[in-house]
Amino acid sequence: MIIVIDALNKHRFGDLLADMYRLRARVFGDRLGWEVEIKDGMEIDQFDRLDPAYVIGLDDEGHVVSCVRALQTTGPHMLSDVFQVILDGEPPLRSARLWESTRFCVDTQRLAGNGNMKAVSLATCELMIGSLEYARRSGISDIVTVIDPVMDRVLKRSDNAPYGYVGSTKPMGKVSAMAALLDCTEERIGRVRAFSGIHGDVFADEDAVRALLDARRAREAGMVPAAVSQVSQDDIMSYCEDQIRAAETPEDRAAALALAQVLARKAQAPRHAGKLH
Image (cartoon, rainbow, N blue to C red; front, side, top):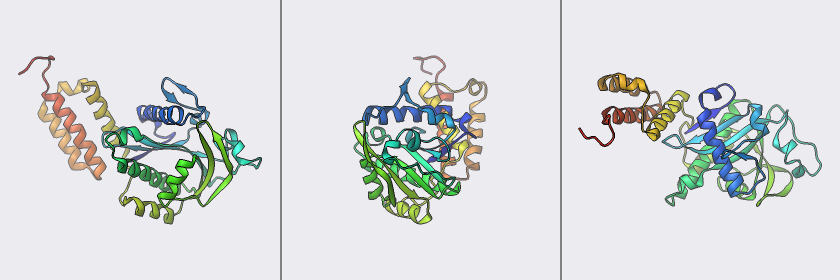
């Protein structure tokens, strides 16, 4: 499932952004060896302070498994201010309808932990679809993206090949980098959907995502909010059943079911560790 976080809703998803920054640190700092600033296990740069939009992919438990950043090219952006060597002296492209896509990464370790490379491919394609559809809905006609040769091959294999390149390929850390151009057309989106077999809506409801994250945090902490302990189990299950019935999408229903399972387990748990009833 995909969620877009920007200046309007970032106050609700600070924990999700932190998880995204940690994934970026593992990918760009540890795996690719790029010269990025990592602090407290998170990779954050000056462009993250410009209120960009983040397209983030989540698994069924609410873990960040993919992400990409979208930034306007009319102001500071990576190709003009950091990777300008790629441009071979040419001026950077600037347009209100051309946005820059950077920091595209997928958590291959989590997704392919059991050797399931299909999950990596699906997460990659879902993120492509989500970023292209978000761009198209926002009035963006084209994307310029700084990628490495591996990602260039991934795009081509996914029937999402760039229609052009800017400048030339240059060495960056352990890999090389290039600037590729993608159009945000229905035709391109349709090709990626056909390749991946992803045909439904990839975007999740914000409230459903928040509920899913809260359920996961409660499960990981081994606790539920104090208010839960002050109501009866019947009240808890009645609330959850109402949320499940009111779900309008599969994502909403999955989030409501996940929350119900966590609350039910905690409501039935013994009050004192090690004591059985």
